[in-house]
Length: 157
Image (cartoon, rainbow, N blue to C red; front, top):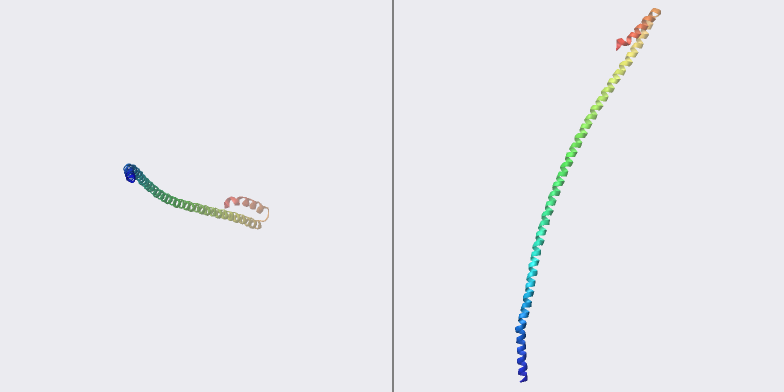
C-alpha cells in the first residue's frame, strides 16, 4: 500500500506541477512572444527608416548629379564665350596692327619720296649752279650766279 500512497502522492505532485507550472511556462512563453513581436516591430520600423534614408540619399545624389551637369554645361558655355571673346580681341588687335603697319609703310614711303625730292633738288641746284657758272664766267657772271643760286631754293619749294 505504501506504493499506492507514493504513487498517488507522485501523481498529485505531477498534477500540481503541471497546473501551477503551466501558468508560469505560459506566461514566460507569452512574454517571450511579446518580446519577439516587439523586436520584429522595431526591426520593421528600422527597415522603413533605412529605406526612407536610402531614398533621401538617392534623391540627393540625383540632385547633385543634375547640379554637376548644370555646372559643367555652364562652365563649357563660359569657356566658349571666353574663347570667342579672345578670338575677337585677337582679330581686332591684328587689324589694328595691320593698320599701324600700313600707316608706318605710308609714312616711310612719304619720307623716302620727300628725301628723294630733296636729293633731286640738291642735285638740280648743283647742276644748275655748275651750268650757270660755266656759261657766265667773269665778274658779272659771278654776281648774277650768286644771286640766282640764293633765290633758287625758294623757287623750287
